[in-house]
Image 1 (cartoon, rainbow over the protein chains, first blue to last red):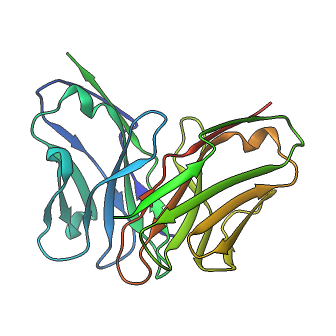
Image 2: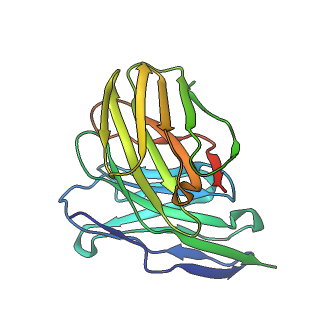
Length: 113
Length: 113
């Protein structure tokens, strides 16, 4: 079965510091990959997506992600976090032609002053 | 532009009572539609998806059901709620065919007492 793994359940980062969230996936030579962010009590907002082409993709809110086929990874990064980046982040992979997704368990990001 | 609505935003229901959650999408045609449940501190579980009117696929056997009476309307129902049905219910839509992202609604917080 296809899987998406986010190894870090919880990350604490200082405001202004860099952030990297890890995501590993299984199965698929050319996966369709996504990162979403969820604030408490809200729906999920799409940050960025990778379908093909340039392996470094830019998203909203200053986020970027790099697809590495050799490592089956799609890590999310931000050079300098803001207090408003405190949220839960989900990595996802499209799993079939009907558009179903497999989501990772999420990483909770806490931003300290 | 496309928008997705869910209602109600919050709901408190006693065990054994019926349930009806509604999701509607505006600004697109023939979307793929999805219902997810997010239990406290856990990731997203796909419950149902639909690729067309009257077509429903169930991912997890349970006492919930879904219907799609119109192209852009997706309803989640139950005849008798269980305590375990408590959670945050998210509706999402995606363009039909090809690689595509999903866009999420604001969610419904359901508490079964």
